[in-house]
Amino acid sequence: MHSVVDQSSLPRPDERPGADVVIFDGRCRLCQAQVRRLARWDLLKRLAFISLHDPEVSLRWPDLPHDELMQNMYLVDSRGRRYKGAAALRVLSRRLPILWPVAPLLHLPGTLGIWQWLYQQVARRRYRLGGAACDEQTCHVHMGR
Image (cartoon, rainbow, N blue to C red):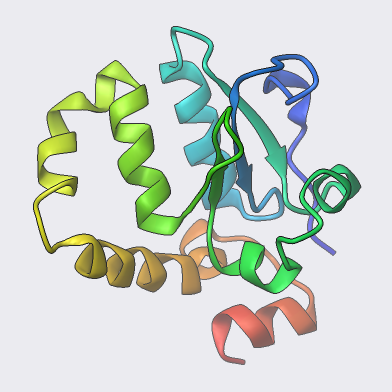
């Protein structure tokens, strides 16, 4: 079984009420690295993080199916709006000043479908790209084994 990222170094939703919440795959090494990077870049402390495998996720957001969370990173903003995959990246590009230079590219009219397709290509291969060992079921689902 995968190890879940040690979230003690990441701000959790209960530690930052009112923050936008990034729901990510805490069993994915690639995802863990990207979330740690986002946390470092969040100088204004506007983000909180939680692994989709944390039981709190199904309590806070019971309408988000596990299968959907396994396919996309989610961002739940302070108003409760949900963004997934490339749309979440678009929002983050506006929230984090370090990402402002790429925001215009991500927001070109008519390109969300392309960005989502690219996001899905990486998401489908994240266990292979991150070098994570996975159990038989996870490898089958995410690596086509």
